[in-house]
Length: 362
Image (cartoon, rainbow, N blue to C red; front, side):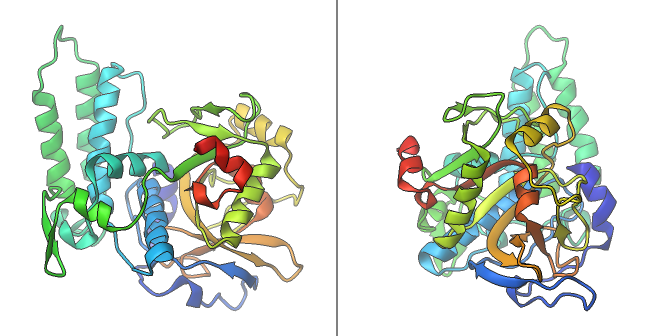
């Protein structure tokens, strides 16, 4: 994820306006909205490889908005602080034979919230503020953290002490802020756990689905993809069924957290993503690209709506986390074929699934 950020985020704009009110540039393709589910404001991950966290919390914010009508701003750095410690502990247990990096997945955010709770943005220092920046900037932070963790994981000691965790936590807290044990919102005192409970979500409702042929369909497996270090299962279904899941969820008023490949192949910095040859993807072509490393997993975004272009071709409306950049003020229009070609996994509420598929998760 870091290579994507370095290439493009220097020109990102900061904004909080509604994505649905964004006006495209005069020379940009015009889309007609078919369905747009409510979302919270556009955020900016800036110089941090935390799209997985921004997109996942954007998804949970949309879930709160859908279920309660309440608009919340959940704290990304709380999740990042807890998740990086989890990732470091896993990396050390593996003696360095796993990935430790800035990246992650929607499963990480869910796991952190279920275990530690969550706090609103205002309960922790603003991203970047502890180092004099206006947004999250991990350049110095991760240049210290990564070698620290790798040194512990590859230690020649016969027995590790517990002190490395204290050093790790000190680095996390110095750059991200200390995660609060309690805080006050609207005159009420919360802990991260009680605040998570107050959001009105059932944290057992969220599932991951994928579509690959190197594992049998209708079984669960851990996707072999970079940045998915946490060994959480995804349910494997045929491609067309996966796309039907996305459409059904959107039609029912749900949003979908999407993890996939944006490293090329038709993804632009202007707010568009489309297959360059306009050839519809197949199950076989998806698998070939995955096996030959043509497709990877390097970004997470939030699908919240459907649209069509001037020719009637179907596109998804997707909330990014690069600020109000591009021709659509932080929103990307990604063709259905592009999503089908480049999806690594989708993450959504199991209540959005049709009855037959939902039985697997009961």
